[in-house]
Length: 300
Image 1 (cartoon, rainbow, N blue to C red):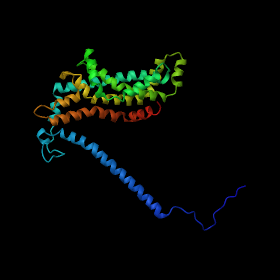
Image 2: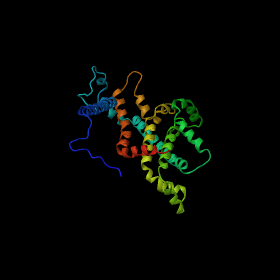
Image 3: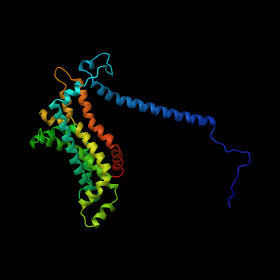
Image 4: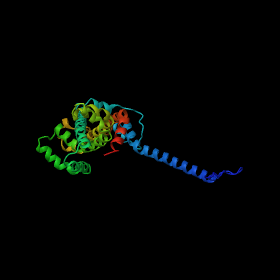
């Protein structure tokens, strides 16, 4: 039997020296303080331009060019917002952006759910090469595809149409959506949809009755990402549309830059109004967005 050696009375177990413990505490305090300073500087660096944009939208155009510049104006004016919200042409820009972005989001989610279910639950020929192609598309810079897509859209008679913009945007949103939803479905046990099939239901019933309702976080995260891409896209919206009744918000902001003058206050106001939809999506669906992003990245 092993014996346990008891310390003799009067002896104390040696601990770290006091100067070492104090140095460790100082180092941790310095690290915490440095992290806080870095976070504050990062927040100021990213937030100051947004604050400047928002406050400039309440200034007159002449006041924006004052020197030295002032962050806060003494004479708040809503003229820029009134000019935008009472102009049918500028309101059409927002209507076009909402229609295109929502259409791209809904169609992308529908197609991505079907494709992700197939990749997650079935084995079929060319499954691995298709996965490689989907991932590879994400690595192609969109600007390199501008001329080919322009020729394709014109050849199909979709130039200056909603369909041309929607189909083009889906090419860039679908790969990410399929990858994320496949990863999300992989985290769900197969027994869920197999139990439905035992009861005599088909795979589509298992998908839309069982898997889709419990995949709301993944759908929300993919939907927000897709909406953001379609809402903020500028290059293809400029190239694939011609008339003002088909322009979107990013193009509308650019059109405020005239040949002889720039309407900076209206540009700032339209930018603020353009930020509101994405901001509201993050505020209301932040919990689902973060959960869907992490769950979809766990298992591919």
